[in-house]
Image 1 (cartoon, rainbow, N blue to C red):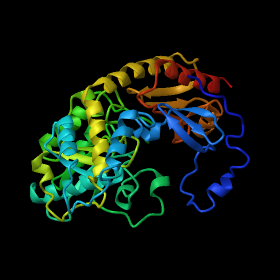
Image 2: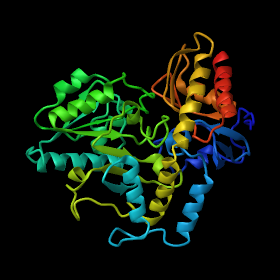
Image 3: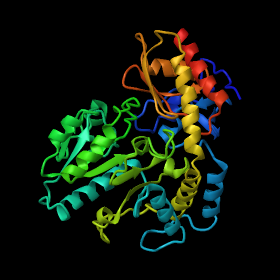
Image 4: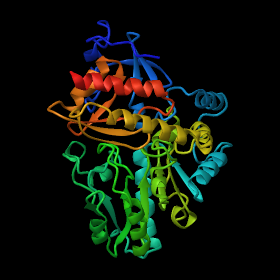
Length: 408
């Protein structure tokens, strides 16, 4: 397959972008393309032009657009029972929670919808655990977090963000968080005190630019948490479920957190589904009525999520991401000297720092004009996160197109 070269105008004249956003909040500034269809690693706009999707819904589309197994699972459940509240049990719940717990080598699952909900749920579990198990006075438990983090957009989560775009103007901010530099174990050790209940980090900082911590950092975090008697919360919402060439990014250092925080790809690119996964000594701080969600763990989500877990259980998707990630890294390394000021690759996930004075947005607009969709972050950095269904030829196309853009 090859992308159809897009012209300067990415939407037909009859499709007015001003009209598109006439009744929308202005909290996003998308690239100027209006998508209408998708299959596998490709999407098509309203004018019929095709694009290689190298963002994959910020990892929500790890298995590509409309994967047949996931679509079939969704259709089957839609024909039977899409939604009941958790006031009642349903016949898809036990298999989803059981199989996801097994994938994570943990005892129990608490299903929610969005990634931010899962992070909030993990923090609530950690605070209640800190009070009930560790004996921290109620209302005083603290959580250590990393600078450059992105864990969601709720008022509590942006309270410990260091990104002014995400944080500014939303005060008063929620207290109880201690910020330390990402990758700095000494600073983390100094920040953990008697009132610390947990450490919350991304094993790889996605929004930060696919920032991979120093070798041994995750093992060091695990050791610190064990020594100090605090919980390790790993936000694998973007990095997990095959993206980095292992089931979880923490697997690269053979580390298991106390709470896995999952989302995005768990919903198969079809619907929002998130979860925290932990052992009973942590999960059982929740009691009936103490936490919940109308849509969390609904039959449709469980049906799709179960199929995602079964696809991951074979290991083939993880192996594919590792192999194609190596090809992506080799391609980026072969770009002309001076084109990049640096790049980082872990599986099919790359953060690329553009040399010179062009912004990441400008590079993404140039990629769009050549039939590739990517996303900028933080100035001159762009992210590549194609779905795991991408082929070797499409990886080469992605690198070749980037090379063309950087040569201009």
